[in-house]
Image (cartoon, rainbow, N blue to C red; front, side, top):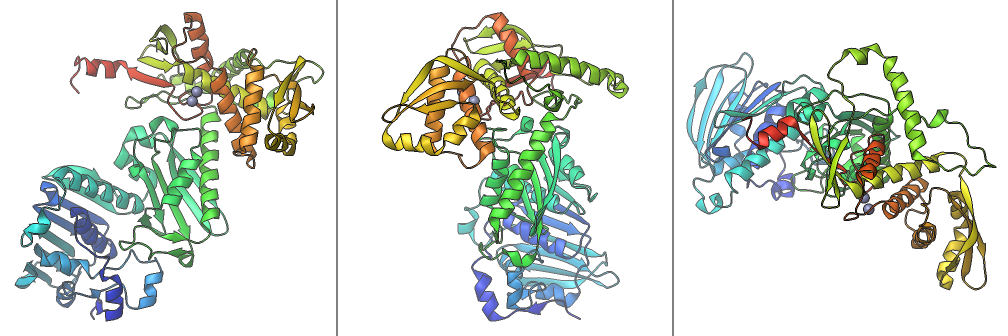
Length: 590
Ligand code: ZN
Ligand code: ZN
């Protein structure tokens, strides 16, 4: 019984436009997806000269009988799509039946395939003409080789990109496919050299490890969440291992890898303040949903899809990631040092709940130093009570000892293993940012009365804006009174404003409220205020500081929840291990 049916002309016309063979990766995609559809557990892709000479795909799938094998090279044949309606569901990896005949028409294709107990079939096609058809050995599965792509269409040959570009596209494709199918073992080689290998363990984290290595897999955080329509599961990286492009954000919807700008944006939003805009995380996100909630037909190659209820999905993704990051960076934890990672991790216990409530009648100034000492004390207690941690010699806390300040901006520091450069502004910004957020998180706001109130004159529309949002100012710890035409008097302000900068800072907060950004999202608003104020009150670049001041910055920085980024996501610390330095000076060779 033949598995392949010829599909309707109508459907063929509908999809013909999309299936164009133009890249090495589009040939690999076609061949490998066929192998997946054949229920293969092991798929090997061997390239010669990045695939420009030949592309071979070997699988252990169910194979084809002679009839199906020949039909696979006839236009408009497909084993997957039987009726037009099927196009609207994504339960299949997509349709094909167009690409293989197209590929065979512009290359030399050699295929050996066999069912479990059948006789094997060997076909050889050159430029679309069947030149060999014979019986072959009966190894179950399919081996297909596409050689000399575009040998008979030299004009198209020159459109292939450089070997390196084609190879990198194929590699990215195989990696994403491996991540969407952890149960299948993938191998990719070029000129005999292995580039990708996954074991098919059916464990996503192990597959991530096999693709990205230990430095990434040991810094991944598992996430899991659901709402009425979507189930989300996967792994996100800590901010210490960000990448400079989006290629490492993988979204898998109902088992199929897709590119979707909105989902990528939701992922990035989850990293809000944990990374700079120009850096991207390593994320593998699996989304499961009812197939009727997605439309696969918006992109000819089926790489993008359209979600119904995208807002609820995005909200779920952003919140889950943000929460996971905050939790992972707050929970007391000591990390094993990994040679490849740029940064060390540090243990910070949470103390907020246990803090004594502040006495309202007193003017209490929240001093970060005190919190720090308290945290240090608590941390010691915690570590002493954990024998396991003491036993493990590899465990390291982040320690930074100042050496000096260069270019008036960068603190040079060291510890036993590493040398560090710290951006003095970014570091203090992070410290102040967390201090202000701490202040927001405590129940009672500490306020200072001003002997001389701050006068703020505004235009009438600005005046109205402030009036509408008076509750927000009060919540922040300001006591504001109207005073004549379009003028306010500020009589009390929260203590976290830095001394000497009260007027300037208060005016800035008024500005932020007038601007109206994040006003309807309390957490984002507080974050924005904290980040903006932290920037204002921190030592600038090119501003001379003493070694004692530098030491204080480092002491405070290592106690931050996330010492590695400023609130805008830029790095605060750049580190070089002894090994990395030795490598740079060629004291060691690899
Ligand atoms: Zn700044
Ligand atoms: Zn910053």
